[in-house]
Length: 371
Image 1 (tube, rainbow, N blue to C red):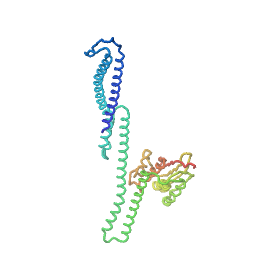
Image 2: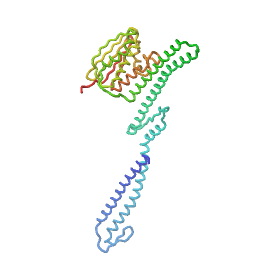
Image 3: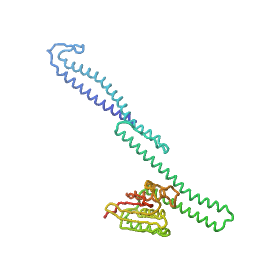
Image 4: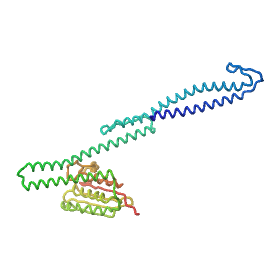
């Protein structure tokens, strides 16, 4: 039984009960009023409804006649009121529940390809209108999420296809030469190994991003951002030295509660970006600090000029230096992972362009409280 039918039956039943009570009350009151009529002398006869009635039975006859008339008129009124209530309830509930039917119909029509449909309810701002607006807002978020997911999958497929194509091409060219030398075979192996490592790094980065976005932070404990920076720098220092990139560290204690490996990945990605998107002989400046509310990690570096209006794009997947996928080396997921991990820890990350070239990335995480 539908909601509209149940509401109509409930309203009709309530009106029927109230009408029956009123009819019974009228019946009782009519009998009581007629019973108070003054007595006539014994032996007198009067006509009640065309029927002669003696004086001693006049009160009973009047009461019965009044009750009969009341029941007749009341029954007609009862049927009319109940019928009108049923019709009005059916019509009114139909109008009230129309947005709900629209929500249901829209939900039935929805698919990944038709998420652009909306209810667009027009009417008074009541609870049903609020429900329709909430449903439309949910569809907006779903459409945006599906679009982002579709774009992410397309970009990831493109990124993975590149190293696989390199490996296949090297294998086909080298194996097609029956006189290939050991040197050529070794060169093919080196190229295939490099492409495999690139694909592996990309898959690992995708897994980290999926884990952080979907499952959040795992095991947590006290972490000092200064120690995390020192550990991450040891892994990238050789590459910085090879490019003569000078680094300056101002690492005051910056305690937080979080997942140590993920936070080390944050520092590592920031330092890797600072080195790999720098120019030879450039500079890096790293600071850690904390105040009563936030522990802060700030990584500034020289490098290519980034337009201020495109800084926000750097946090999108497969963006490098403000441009699209294959502009430079790397997976293009470094800052995307940084943003996902920081958000999972309840923090926030911002970036701004350095005048003359370079970037400053600032990570703020909730400070670890004593106790």
